[in-house]
Image 1: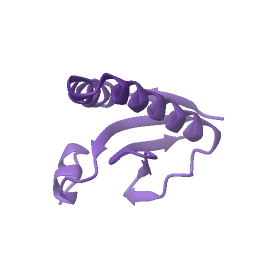
Image 2: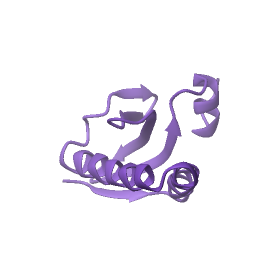
Image 3: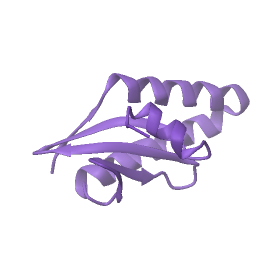
Length: 101
């Protein structure tokens, strides 16, 4: 089972999404955090469960939310690169992941 590490940008993404949800509905914000924890647990147990998005990036769609967890696998480590709203354009997602268009 690989160690799961959230990079600084992914931590920021989670904080910003949480703050936006909490401003509207605190209970939904708690549910969002629980879904993040469930998704991370799934990735730790099944690191290849998220299909390849592009290049080395994989994407796991969060159950019950319009967000995707974008991550890379390197040896025995799983790096969460970003948590992004999937309703935005694919180009915006690629820019956030610093991929060439």
